[in-house]
Length: 165
Image 1 (tube, rainbow, N blue to C red):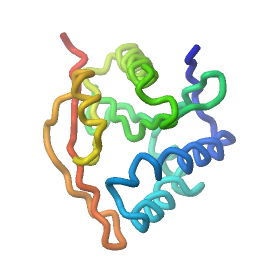
Image 2 (image 1 turned 30 degrees about the vertical axis):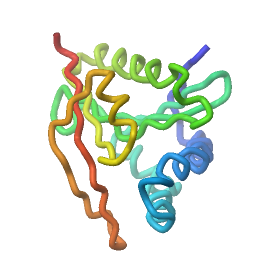
Image 3 (image 1 turned 120 degrees about the vertical axis):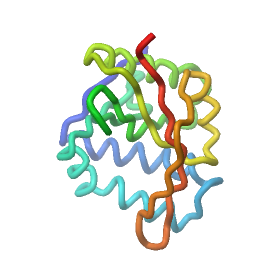
Image 4 (image 1 turned 90 degrees about the vertical axis):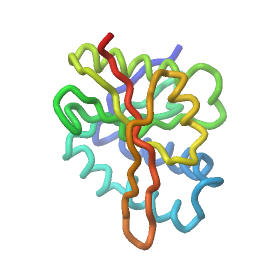
């Protein structure tokens, strides 16, 4: 039974452990090992995670019954009524078993309760998850190349799903 847990500061080490298990496997065929190491530190160091919480990112863990993944969202980003999905990662061992759909269903429920009109996310343009997001109703709306430092670029599609019928 999949359940969701709102992450508190004391839970950040669990997010870090999950990221160390999931992130390199997810991106090994897209990014080189130097960029993966750089981005892991940039996004998952304790100071970075605390900074994300300070900017209004809300983290959740997916539990079955132990943690199997995590996601973070931000309300009203980039404008009122939009829910930005900053992170959404599940243990590769349980992918393609319906958990991803359940996570997105939960995010949509949260967004609808908050009277949001759309979900928005960035995804690496070479990430196979694009097909999954498309099946869930997301559409590519733009592209972004983000200089993240150290000579690395995030080359992303911005995808959006309307929640208004």
